[in-house]
Image (cartoon, rainbow over all chains, first blue to last red; front, side, top):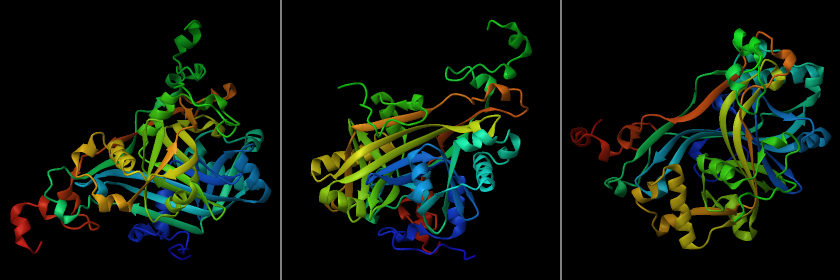
Length: 226
Length: 226
């Protein structure tokens, strides 16, 4: 397999061409790190962009959905032309001039026609990969979907063929004549970090979720009136 | 002004209706917190989704772009039908069953026809707001754009009319018969946090950026061969 995707007219930017990347390692890394992607499709001649979870298995991108949703139904009929974009924000770039402010980011755009996954083996494998994408190893550490749950979930597949990445990194780049201006310039890095895990017993105190006796202390679980 | 946007057929979800929100406070909060949005439009009958920076000024959303880009040119001609989506990921929701895994998130979808901002006063105001969105107060703390820079930058405006938010929060919600399964369930919160600011002198050591003598120590700046 070649190490890079072939650029097409649609995946060649008109500006900042040096930010475009086509090598699979860069593309895969961004898709694998991003927790959500944005699925774009056309409905009644108008664009629709929805966030969803995804995962990559080799050169196929899988997207999670529900069987009744409009894009899934369209994909089932004839395949759905889509643009899937995943973006990671790495930092704020503050320059001395307004014009040169920017963000450091890494993004991937995948163009193509998505198909609905109908093969049950592929569907199970894709759903497992979706879990492992969110949390490596998780698919083997929970109850797998039963037949009813499997039928209620839809998965779209999109081959990675027309693909590009765009990466802006490095520091603030001001015009030389602005270097002496008395404004702070530089990068404020941004990181997505995990906080303290909240086990379901605590999380279930949230108004939206039911009480979960399994995670309460035995004495309270038996107490009955808390 | 009414406190909420009017739901339309396109902003009413078919599933998880309890996650849909239309109040301006919720919508504004998500748009104001998100550092990037995803701009969707239709090009040659196919969807395109690109990440870009945005800001909200009252009930108008401004998007940053470059004058030569396809969506800006289309917007200049006749207005551009768009879908702009901003998404914040707040946590991983790990359930005991594969089916009930989820993400906690907050997203906003704005539908409408974007116009190119041609009024220079509005354009300057929008560009200042874009900077203040990235870093509050920043527009007053840098050199403002000159006429050439202003001409090289394009700004799209989109009125907040057909708008909805979607919010998933709270804990893992498993089926009661799964509560005794021996798998960890709960939420792993996620936060976007700022790291140590990297002043331009250090950032400019990065290979992608030019040397910036202003931030180097005088002895090295004069040394010439480092």
